[in-house]
Every structure is written in structure tokens, then in C-alpha cells.
Length: 489
Image (tube, helix red, strand yellow):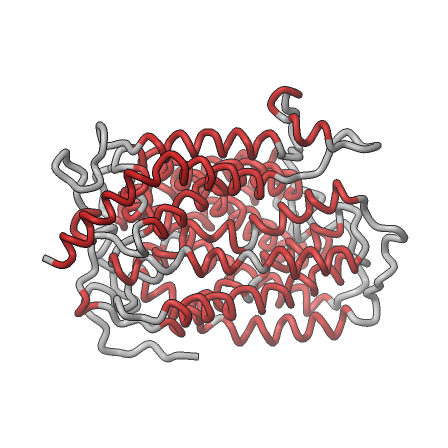
């Protein structure tokens, strides 16, 4: 993997506070190569959350073969993350500054708000897992702290998790790379312990096709589609002439390949450790069991805590720059403090009120509804603009800006977003109750169960893409011509 050079620009050096937010990164400060981005994503992918996701898949009632097919197919969505990482090298800014071109600067604030909440949701997921691992360590040490211990662990975790995103991009990248080797070794040891106990016959017949489609949506949103709104935040330090093929290739190599292996390991463990994720503490299944020795469980929990802090830094970093894109007048490091405070409150509620499994499924359902149509609109708009923007105009939010449109809103994008969200809900097999009129596709594909097939990802993306292409084509092409004139001048 690539080595981060020591002579990075002063604005983005490891273990120093990054000064850039959503502002344009000058070409002279673009130090990253596509392989650096791939290395960062590899560090974000070789981690415990994907192991947990694989184990949780088995709680749907899948056979191991079904789970394996879902893991492979679902992780192909990392091609979407690769495509959603190609805009920043040319624009030099973050995804929701680029998003102003397709939605208008004011219209984009709504989407930025959705993403901000999504990043906080992922932060809370990481915090729940950190606290769970800490509670298992406490139990192994012979203590029973109860509710006070949970509160203390949450407070300490929130304080620690803000450090890496506070420092910024280069610090996160370097830290994630360092953690790759220890986790590869950890998962290799776990595989050795798991092989004698894992079985491909844990579920005799597996789940039906409706449950399979629900599992596919679950896997897609927790892999490539769920990261797509962050891609450009980490490629904006690449040069404008960086190879698009190399970016997509390195991103896919750094994400899909390790995640398929790790989720498969999680599913294999889920065939004999069957209650992973079914309680508020996802790690409690490891506390009283005979499959893994106590020393390994302790080492496993310690490394998981360290890794989860690093992974949460990605969510906090992206949520911080998203808060700026919403127009909140804060510096990126100040935004980190705001997000930590909000994540603290939500985590306190979550760890006392729900199983991890339930939290994860509810969260996935909510994220699908907005992110599927958004990504379709974002990519269709980019293609219609001939794969480029005017970087200086993306930084403008005033009436004279090229992308300002009507009142700062490009209504075809807003209409396509709303229609796409409605289509996604109509085809969503939700864990919570939806009225029949708002869930017609799912209701009418139901078999012997109370739920039908989950086509939410495909309906959300497909409908939004078509509606936006029809409504926006003429206007965006005219603007693309104006972009060409401005870039040529």
C-alpha cells in the first residue's frame, strides 16, 4: 500500500488540525493518489462492523449459501462508491458542495441535512458497539458496573471519538492504514477458531425470496450505497487529472474485496453463535460461550474498540463538512464537537431501549429512502454535465452564481427526489408499520408472510433517475454549455 509522504501541505498534515472544510483545495495541495484513497478505504473496511453485519444476516433466517450470495452481490454496490468519488478531483471540494450544481445551493441544504443525520446514525452505531465491547471487557475483569458503567463508557467514548476527525483527513487516513495489519491477523485467528464449529447447514431450507430481497437491501445500504455520500470527501486531495478508472478500481479493491471476506467470516460465526446482535450489546454473545478462548475475546474486544474509534472518525469527518454545506457558520473542527454532543444523547437512548439488530434494521430502512434517489440524481446530473463542473461556482451561494437557479433551488431535482423517495417507501419492507397506501409494492408482493419483497433501492434509484432525466435534461444541457464557456475562458 502507498506510504503517505512527510511533506504534505500545511493544511493537511497527519496529527495536525486540518484547516480545509468545504472550500476549494488548490491544485498545489493535491497530494493524494488513487491508491492512497484505496488504502484509506481498506483501513475502513477491514473492521469489526462488517463482521457483525455478516453475523446479523444469519438472524434473518438465511442458509449460509444464501448469506454468501447476498454478501457477494450486495458488495458489488461499491462500484457506486467508486463512481461517487470521481467528481472531487475536478472540483476540489466535498460532495455536498458539488451537490449544489444538481439541487441548487438552497435545495442542496435539505439533502445535506439528510446526510448529516445519516452520519450521526452511523456514529451512534459505532458508539453502541464500542460500549458493548467495553462492557464485555468489564465482565471478563470480574466487575458488574450496571447502568452507571454504561453511562460512563458512553461519555468516555464520545470524548475519545472526536480526536481523529478533529485533526482531519491525513490523520484519519494514516491511522486507518496502521490498523489494517492487526485486524488481518485478528480475523485470521478467528477463522482458525471458527472452522471447527461453522456449518453450512445451520438453517435447513433458508429464507424465502421476500426475506432474501430484504437481506439484499440491508447488505447494499451497509456497503457501497451507504458510503456513496462520503466518497468525494476523500478524493478531493487527488489531482484533477487522476485516472477515473484507477479511482474506481482502487476504491473497489479496498472495500468490496475485504468486506466480502469479513462478512463471510461473520456469517460463518453466525451459524453457531446465533445471537450476535439480537440484544442491546452486540458483543454479549462472546461473553459466555465455549467457542473462543477468554484471552482471544479480550484481545478481540480491545482491538475492536480501537478500530471502531477510527471508523467513527470517517462518519464524524463527513458529517462535519456536511454541516458546513448546510450553511451552518462553523469551522470543520467546531462541527465535530456539535456532532459528538448529538451522538452522545442518541447513544444514551439507544443502548437502554433496543437491540442492536433492531436499531440497525430501522436505521437501514430510513437511510435507503433518501440516499437511493439522491445518488441516482447526483450521477445522472454529472453525466449530463459532461462529467465536469465549474469549481469556483460551486463555492458560490449567492444569486449571481451559475448554479443558483430559482431562489437557490433547482426544482426538477427536488421533484425527482421526492418522487424517488415515495417510490422507495412504496417498495420498502420496513421493520416498522407503514400504511398500506404508502407501501403498495411491498404489500402486493407479500406471500405467506406479512411482508413482501423489498425493492426499495432499485425503485428509489430507477424512478428518481428517470424523473430527473426527463425534467432536467434541457436545462442542464444548456448549463453544461455555459460551463464549457466558463472553463474555456
